[in-house]
Image 1 (cartoon, rainbow, N blue to C red):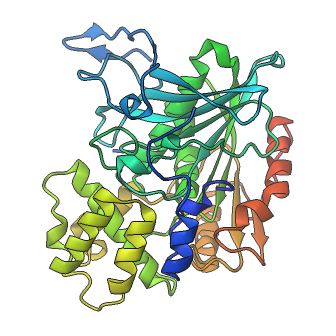
Image 2 (cartoon, one colour):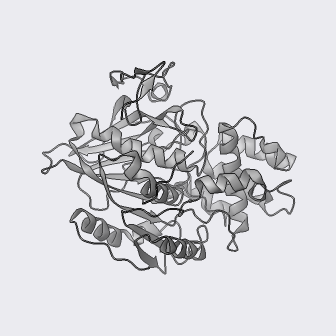
Length: 413
């Protein structure tokens, strides 16, 4: 396997960018991404001095205060925990936690990432509990849009074990902005979240895991499948499930409206990491003003309700970032489907999806097959972007059970 370097939920589909109608989107996005009222390898530091991870803080303050990143950030390697916070779990047989842990961004800088962990309270099987990493769909770019701020347990797809759901880099901690669809921001955060739960003794987590995600989270699952073996060699990724994944990011399939809004979100995410990038160089002035307010002060429903009415304008972009050197470099770094992984992949697509249209996933399938990736494919003819995870749930459950049972995966290529 050639390593890749990283240099729009059954319960979170309400985050997804349903851009074909703002009314539907606003209703769909009004839940989990709300406010923060909550319920209840050897690294080096300095001049060659090995970093010593700080003691994990058992946080008992307010939900808002949890997302204030310690300054300075305590020493730690990717996957080292910074703090945990008990939350109320819906299932009385498991424990729920908010977590903050170390990861690294596209530049290799140490970053604090937040997320959720749920683990059973009874005795694990031999070898420890299996792990399911969940990658959520689009919720927004600003801190207030992090799913862990208003927690809902991620889907388990029949996997009895530890579930971990990252918020992704830049989404959650106060004062940050998420680099949307960044391979590093998603993939590093997913893999390092698995490392974090394995480092929590009380989870009794084992070394076998799977990843599943929808929409943006499908993009994250694809990237995770490419980098996991190199980033976390001590654990075995058995398979990845990408549901209606963001992919083929340079191509249009009659979905230009969606692509323009998504590109705008990507542009602001790039600017958050690179001060030399100014979105005003690419967006019409009034479009830029709308985007600033929606992205920085709102979540995905606000972005869509503000941007959709103007996204059809022929001069929406002053310069389309997809067609200049900025876009070309970003796509090369962040578009999944560039390398094959030893772990198999399940692609799930709804036939009635107007957001990630079937033609987009079909093109991804062909691309993956050319790489030699083992790909199993599930088409759900009656499903749209919001319903595909539920409608395919039984098939996903069966596929994941087969991975943990050691059965070979089907290859539809």
